[in-house]
Length: 328
Image (cartoon, rainbow, N blue to C red; front, side, top):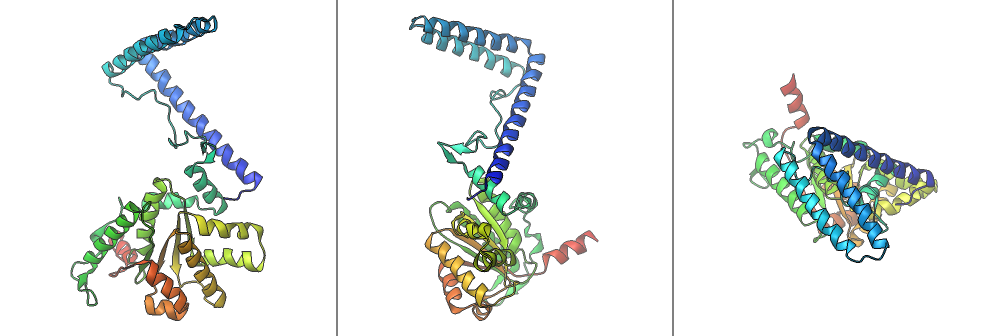
């Protein structure tokens, strides 16, 4: 993820603030435990004293010091564990608190950027920090089948809106479960308000929680960035092209609502084709069926999607209208 020096420094400052916040949290927990169990502080002080004493012995050439230190530390830790258990504290109460346990809030693992740093860069470069707020509201935990009718039948499939929604959710779970092992893409389509964007957000939440990099664009936003790179030679937009091609998951929402022309058609094909070649997954949500897709874009775009995407059609009532009626 290409970053300017100022952008990099901004992310590093966020990590510094995160570490400081979590250190203060652990310190507050420790002080609370000391107040409630004074013996704990005595044990921690004894651990510090014996560590210094054994270090001096080791520097003086006493090779038995290290073994003595290990046995003493084990004894002290056992006493601490007994005290915590007796007073109803969890065994891991003094374990350091980390926002990202993988990199321990350093942003790096073995000298390479952690997945959390990569997503922080995406959030900064594409101003997508609000995506996490959206995903707190739109995820599988909040997804409801109550808005899909069991009596409205799709004559093409013989399945009700409810059965179709359940099948769509199952396919999305399968997409997530096999994300590491199987390259696949999703094409969510259907009328306005049937839950396409909500369902793509559910998938995004699961994958972001799993440490994968996710970029979300409406079709208008994507083509705007691509056009700036091609026509204005915008440096940031040009750099963004590679990020768009290389992120673990690209979500393209509301395809077909942008102004379509020969440029958007060619760029859509380029984007989809590049990500297929690089085996990077994409989710497209749109109102366009296959015939409309071919008419609006091209047979080449249709070919790529029909051959490389799992097609998921949702249908039923407009959920937004149903929610408004229920709240009024």
